[in-house]
Image (cartoon, rainbow, N blue to C red; front, side, top):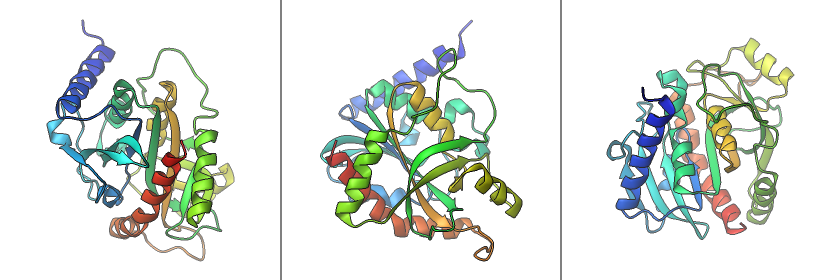
Length: 270
């Protein structure tokens, strides 16, 4: 009988071969883009674009704001592979689907893994358009994981070295950079006021519907992780109003320039 891990390995190997056959150089860094951040990949130099539909086993998202292509490029002077779009647990996707990009990054030999997302800011000092460097995470997504056997510590999953480089890059580029804890939920519903109060009491600074499973998988495979959340709405008492997906996408488009500048400048310092 074929073990599920064998099936995953075969799919990832086939995807790796396809990308290399298409001319992708093995990347130094892999970047995953969140909702509305696909414009990050616009204008990247020497871009090699491979639609997800061409990559064996690669899950395809139906959520608007996720372009659905792998982009090989140079970013901050480093060889990079940018995944423009991701799938989510709330689409009915399995943990293996959600973490496929992580497995592919590890198989390609990337050393760094940069993950981005669009988030609701629940720190009272945050504003829409802020970038938040993720220092830690709270995972409220349950279900089976396909990780290496045994247990492992998630403390230190977000690289202090990369965070220090990002802080310097932000200071030099005069980019306002916040820092805090990200809470990842199942979605697809935006949080209720009671859930926001709970998240704040638990120590979260921002909430979203992605990232935590990918970071668990990346950390378990030894990738150096940096996470950046773009604050697209503020679901706080006194500032609360109903959030729409269209508003999140628009905030993503407006914030993509600062995000690409921060990531590029950070990678230059590696």
